Image 1 (cartoon, one colour):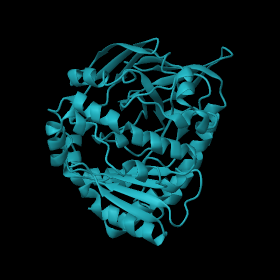
Image 2 (image 1 turned 90 degrees about the vertical axis):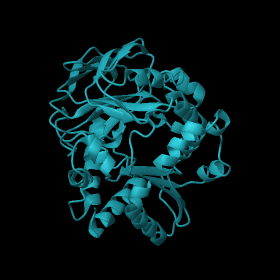
Image 3 (image 1 turned 180 degrees about the vertical axis):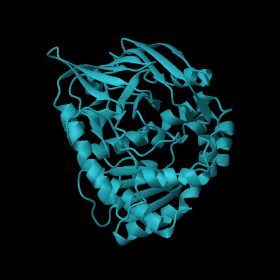
Length: 402
């Protein structure tokens, strides 16, 4: 699959991403969790060696294989779905870093499982995410994740395994001798775009394409984020809007796989923040079950744009990590149903209490489902002073220069 040189480069980029994602520097003795699928073991080994050389304390966990995961969701009773593993709270409360390596051997093994069972499990594990969010807001934790090619991913994407691997190599810049230097340059260019967007006093953003006519209201005390090191690759910039004010129609022309289910042609109609109508050309029943997972699952938690000049991803990859960063001819816009990102709060995230989150319209949910539009589009910013600016067209931001 990957050559030894490519694996070393991949490990370098992942280490770069994890370091970038943390506010304060890592120190010898820090606890770093490597969470990996079985298919990713060659890359996991490279990271394990690297972290030992850095004098970290790496903790290694293999993700539940797909056949065991299917047995769990088929057979577990409610107490087992909601079971909290002893020691997990202690571990997560001490973690300084996390890298997740994704290499699924099946995307459809859970397709016959009642989505409400998976939802119950996700709600029960939400406390771990909240622990890490708090540590990250305090600057004590950084995380990143990436994808490893598998036959299943390639088959579901409709391309060969070799082409799938080439897409990953191209997207992560493993075809360059020093890919982390390229990521550092993209990081700096992305920062200029975010600074430009954050300098505007925006009432709402208006997204227009052949099938989308959506108004997204950023709300108060928000900031644009992106290319933080969290996801490799990541070319998007995003914010978590005031979920109570979203208006209009969003259409996801790009299909997606979620919890073993294939969903295509999703159309969502929002009124005053609430989902008042929905349809899907395929997988509509699953869509309806997902958005009823909890109170926040039917509201918008993220609004995102990707510039095609950065992203070299030009193929459907059957995985959200890549599909939400699609470049192609038109870039992409995506929204996420469900959980918002607390770090898009413009002030100190530590002060963002649950009460303040609710007051400012940050959505709360166990769901976070990215739905992607790759159509040619224009995005206009309607400023609070009445001015209208086109901020995105022809697949790229309208900023004059980086």
